[in-house]
Length: 116
Ligand code: FES
Image (cartoon, rainbow, N blue to C red; front, top):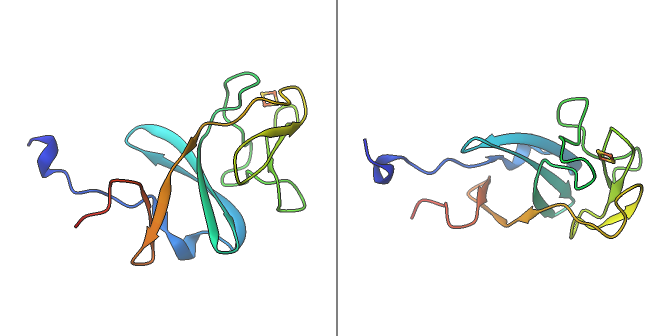
């Protein structure tokens, strides 16, 4: 089977992501996570710029108690959901690696992967 035969898969169903929540996904072998803030959905590589490790200790929990900032569980770094910039903690000024996604037909897709 060639790569052309592999049907694109969504990252997840929009309804699986709480209105102010987050979710980890494995996509094409990459550990990623989604953050939803109301109507906005953001996608990041699950890798803290401080030590290069996964951000979460508890599955799908990438946000702080306020639900408004991304938090690394290991040393507590806080990141802005909209651009991944670290605003507190040991890696201030560094950023998470953001990937682009979009919502279509009730699913979230990595950009360029929606079936036509
Ligand atoms: S590994 Fe994330 S804050 Fe240290």
